Amino acid sequence: MDKHVPTIKTDRLLLRKITDLDLENIFNGLSNPNVIRHYGISYDSLEATKEQMIWFADMKQLWWAICARDNQTFYGAGGLNDINPEENKAEIGLWLLPEFWGKGIMQEALPLITNYGFNHLQLHRIEGFVDSENINCKKAMSKLDFNYEKTIKDSEIKDGKSIHIDVYAKTI
Image (cartoon, rainbow, N blue to C red; front, side):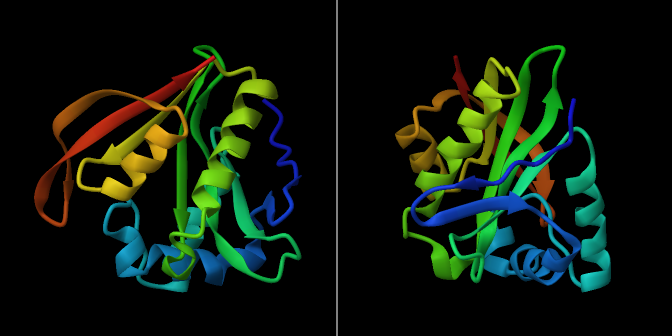
């Protein structure tokens, strides 16, 4: 698979390759208690966040920085994880800094990522794994035509307690 990360633009959004210059932005998101409450990864220092930057560069991931169209404001990050060309599937993920919640950014960015996966990577299935308590994300997945498939009970341990994960999927 080609690791080229294309730039995608809409009237108000710019999805671009994540670079080393985004380290502080990524840390600000993945250390924010409101972001990581339902997100599986968190960091407590810029140095530790470098691990995430290495992960973004892995061939199995294709992630974008989600920014204002003029690239002056960083909103969050989103992309496809665990891209599996043999099975033509991947997992979608996205997080936004809290000051940009409720502004329709997720509803605009997720279809761009999904369409790229279907149209350019030739995926047939894109899955979303959502903490069962993340009501806003579950609503967004449903609005974007991801179908709820099942709940995996006691699937992960977060903050010392077992959590359930809801599985959503969109197929061609």
